[in-house]
Image (tube, rainbow, N blue to C red):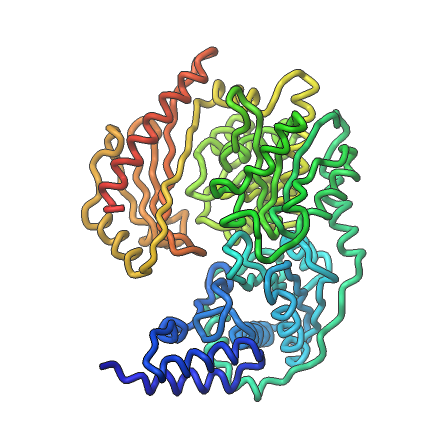
Length: 546
């Protein structure tokens, strides 16, 4: 029989240090239950600590080091403060934003008190606001770092802690490791000096951001019937103000999802990519015969788009929206580097080349895309777009939404829609069709096992297409730092990338096929592409044992 004594002692010590009466009581109840011989999740809560890495921290709310709570956040803040002091930013400013999730405001206050206690200036955003507004504020206010308390599009029981440095971009190695080392070195919470709750930033920072985003829209048609949903998140007011300032009529907003609600009652997952998440918006669009549906995820750093077609409404894939935004910006004369993540479509590179502009591929995540030198536009297939890197070096679902509306209004004025523009792009560059196979794991140990299985026995064909090249991305290259992933290059321009998710217990497979298109046969190319993608997906399941 397993001796629970060390675990129970660890849990009691944690509870004694926990300043939150709710998580303290939760932990004490679990200890009592374990002592009675009942099954609990105590072992999982103490099976390590939430890993501080690519997205800062993210995990389920609850007591213990392997959950999001005030102890974990306080230690993270102290580690960040020590890092800033050690890297020449003693006395500098840290701006702190928060969304409307459970405990986001509490975690923001703890962070502010730790920063001021460490001799830094804490600037706290005036209310729940989108993540891109926090990224904007870092540079606008000249801060040494920024913290956004959000779990983005994760389930309602989660929260997270995203860290930016003074350039307005999310942390990358080695900063993440160096901050993690300082978090691990933090002593007892009682020994940490705590100051006041910092200074609340004035509403003018919000106004400046709104004006900056609205200013991206040029003069042109504004006749567009829009349906919008913030998916119970914090984007609603911001989007409404930006659209109004840019000259658009107020959108029809999904009433059931209009106001921030940390329980996200109308969706299984508050992610516009998830099946069913956009159903209410599409129903409202059908009712009003709207021209366009746009949505943000709960912290409004992503933008989703749906368009009417012959069968009702369909969601555009992130790669399609990325191509539309690139097309729009190129048409407007944007110059500089066009960048996308390696798991996004290869189409952007061809569009940039045709426009005489440089193109770069980066690892997954805007912490990499946002750091591309000379960036003009960057995107990743997971609905993230950076359309104004001069002001926000991160994905921004508000500015992307505005530019999509501008493009749709211009197309409508010509009797066309966004699908027509996608057809034009396909005729010029070939149809680039993408899809994703995503598998959620209950046992996290199955994820590395799946990756090792694929490394040991790579497939020679997928979907009837020969695999020309297999790259183990964990080995790195001249162009990319090492990352856990595999890239298969297939004949005829097809490719597959397999990688563990950085934020969820999933293995994700990203598929792309390229079909040449004549002047009239875009629909035929789409049918052919769908068949190829399905065949690749089936073979991939078999090869990976998914």
